Image 1 (spheres, rainbow, N blue to C red):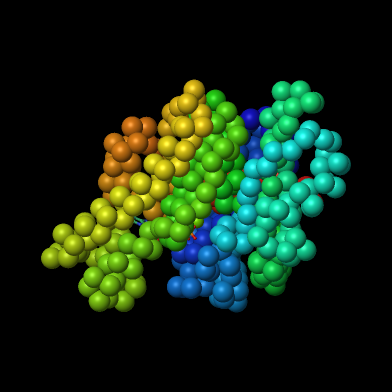
Image 2 (image 1 turned 45 degrees about the horizontal axis):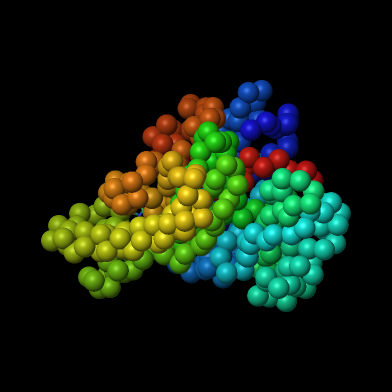
Length: 352
Ligand SMILES: Nc1ncnc2c1ncn2[C@@H]1O[C@H](COP(=O)(O)OP(=O)(O)OP(=O)(O)O)[C@@H](O)[C@H]1O
Ligand SMILES: [Mg+2]
């Protein structure tokens, strides 16, 4: 990817506000590459962020502010990303037109695809320029996000004296990190498994061709462990992560892992099958897994054997330099998959 020269002021701090944890990434542009200068995360209390909406903005704001303080981040320009029911991403096929014409036309075009009142959403679009010539039609990626949800995020961040200048979408941020770190010519499935949702984004020749959010995630495992043994959420989470020994509960926990992973893998296979039926000549070469749920033990191998693809954990820093005196290398390695979205936001140049 060709990157314009950017001074360090041109990059935002990437903030990924998940339902389980806030992730923050700060990059610096050097002559040849990006340098990771700051990384951190903090867990959120249950229910503070739900299905992509801020249920408790004060609590979330407090945690972001604490995290910025701990990481000694002074910069004010930030970017964040949204996901969940309030964001609609849709690829539509339109007659070729100029950017200005498209800008005018998109509002009326969008109405038929958006399940919300058009006045209640922020609209954005990108011409994917899939046309061969000007008489052909082209694919346009349409993004609509509910204003009230986005405004809640903006208000929460502005109350912290931060300047939100970029609003991204989880799946696009992931794609952005991928494109910077991996070979472009691959056909690849990017799968992010968080605490409460799985985002599948299949990219063929640099274009996202299948994109979906599914309401499954690693919290399911915690909740099942919780109800199987009648535990508090925190204790079930600690058991899941192996922070406390499972002992006689081991067998039951393994069963929970295995049935839930089977369900995740079925969803992933459905998306892959859909892709292969529409693109029989461009088979997928690999699957790259991110999000905390990607660390469930045995998932990578299970997914590889079920899909016959090479399955790798996402390393968002593969093409970046890192100051290992400041950032602990073990932390960097372990946190990579969860940081993929925050890193994708941090790569975006801010134009404001
Ligand atoms: N080794 C592990 N095994 C199983 N689950 C894990 C492991 N490590 C982290 N997780 C889980 O990953 C989840 C956190 O991942 P992540 O930070 O990607 O989620 P999130 O972005 O907050 O959630 P979402 O995107 O779904 O809103 C938690 O449910 C956590 O328990
Ligand atoms: Mg997430």
